[in-house]
Figure (cartoon, rainbow, N blue to C red):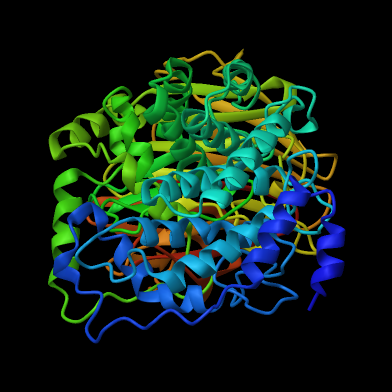
Length: 631
């Protein structure tokens, strides 16, 4: 454990050092009795209003969080116990973000909250704020992974939690000296964060969600303590974010590519907080541009169970699907505030009727509310409650779904490009299929390029590429490396004419993408009204790999009759594979009998887990044409 004198020495450049040390000294004289446990049977579910049900699990763990606040003079105020963020170390400012959680329970009277104005809660909250502020550098930034780091994330998100904590303390008229320190800390932090010369604003903005968090945090902090100069800088940075943090393709940079999770679950809610506080038109425009992008990359299953995402192009995380109905806790809630102004977003949110039903179900569950496990907690879940929600009605969501690009039309080809980063995203809708693909420079090692999703309007997702070599749609080299892992430069044509990327209606003409992994593999991808063909030519033996989404009721057989059972491996020497799903038949053929395998994986989709990924592999000498026909 770090000695507190050494620790504070490392933070000697902390903001308001004299004040912070004086505050720490007085805090160290306070008694720190543990927070009393909840009474038996609490939290009582039926006492919570629907929108405040999210507080119940956090009330359940509040004594644990509070009592893990260190009272050791060497680390006084550090949120120990590993409840939130890693590394769980005294120098990580992000660990301290639960000061907001403690301040909310202290400041807000509710019939179910026994800790309103609790002195034990107040004293440990006071120590936690003191420790938090001691971490701030002289320039206003906060550290995360080392004491000397100037972290964009720790500062951007932290300013928001500190501002919300200040608001709670003002509401409770509590800890006046600490409030003064918070005000000065917020001013110093905003001065660092909003400085145009700060490297965090280099073009293009990487990890744009972190920049946006700082802007939403500053928006709230300036409402609490107005400053005309900082307000002008904030306005300038919002405009800069719109121009430099969002790709021409429509996604938000994470770091220089798309990420489903960070774009939808973090970035969009942060923009929505700015909107909630200001009704800013710039962020509405960003949300509208993103909604258009998202509509090509989050693809609904025809049975209404939910959507599968183009996860192979997510640059940071793995979120492969979204259920149609998502209960609380749901990190996307705040993003729904855009729905009235950007109705195209309604397709991706739970309806207000469904959310009311899931909340009613939650309230009827016998017994007290159960808290989240350590590291599964998040102050964001609580911090967004006060802004309300704007979930679509069932009718509005269905209208938005009908406007999704691949449902609104059954014949188009469109590219979304970021030429500066050499990224090209291709979306092709034909009467019997929808295909998405990516070519160019991968934004991270997670991304797998080339064709990535194949969907049928009745059968739903048929092929779904993942983020690793063993489960992506690709040609594998003898060492198992997928061509989808490399730089794939491509040319594009519709029929016999080059395609410049403008939106086209191919009609009877095929869409052709020709691409290669340097000189080792060349591939011609051809998309017709009901087929996807890959003609591969390699300089070494290769294996064609197709990650198939199979349902329990599918009838799957190799040509010749060998069955493939759901969730089981299979092998046969065959020239093809047929999947029958309801009235739809999907035939995968490769023309000549070869030793092929299907391997069941642990990957499932949506809440019921019925859809399961199975990987078809066909080894061959180096030249092979594979056709997928959908009827």
